[in-house]
Amino acid sequence: MKVIVGSRESKLAVIQSEMVIDAIREFDSNIDVSLITMKTTGDMILDKTLDQIGGKGLFVKELDKALLDHRADLTVHSLKDMPMEVSEELPLLAFSKREDPRDALVLRAGISELPKNPVIGCSSKRRTLQAQKLYPDAVIKPIRGNVQTRLRKLDEGQFDAIILAYAGLKRLNLEPRVSKLFSTEEILPAACQGILAVQGRAGYQVSFLKDFADEETKLIALAERSFVRTLDGGCSSPVAAYAVIDGESITITGFYVDEKENQYIDAVTGSKYEGEALGRQLALAMKGGRS
Image (cartoon, rainbow, N blue to C red; front, side, top):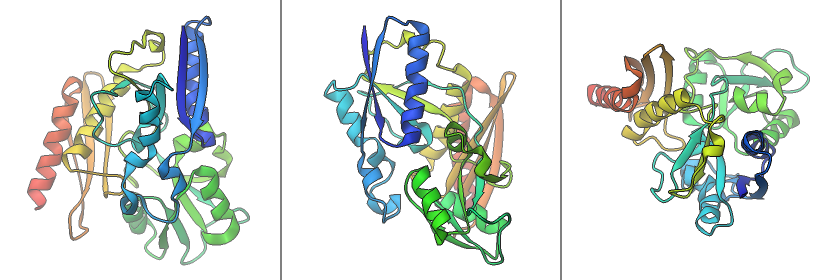
């Protein structure tokens, strides 16, 4: 059996795809697994924010085409970077166990604490609005690019600090760069931050990912994506969701920003098997109660 895995070209994307490849080989060493990489439109346009160039779909368009053309059998994504609507032709087939979902503060090389009136780089309105409350004297500026590109911009002096997903830094063995880990109360993570998704053609069997796929994470992912989808949250929409399972219960915390940039956080708890409905219910209650 031969399996071709498609990935974005960035170092982090390749590491994440190799995690899936390793899982396949562990399941059956006779499976011939190979990796192909490609640059996506989202990776090539770095001088504009995602909402200006078309959203998260720009990170998957080329990979989707590779699946449809049978140049790849599976593709691997950071689930937080995927559009909320996924084609029925190319369903999400497996979800990894969630890595630490928190955001992290990374300081410019050579400094050990934030200076007065620091310049902080953020890649989304979600981070920007929450960081501004934590650092009211800071100048928050947008930053694009993969993790290495952002770190280079930081260390060149364009920023005093940047905020990144801790999961990516861990996977890149860059934990020593972390100055502070934000609690989920300080900065609510992006929906599905820390979760990898494996995508493929409808009907493609992935029994070889049995040990990789995590059913509890799937329930969390569906709940968080339901909340954001209900609010039409795109790549840069100031929307966030974070779900935690405790026994048979799931608690979903949602972050919503109205047109006047008033920020609201609320939560709902119910059966972990009803996460999608609960996420939708929470979103409608928050949106309806604030409009």
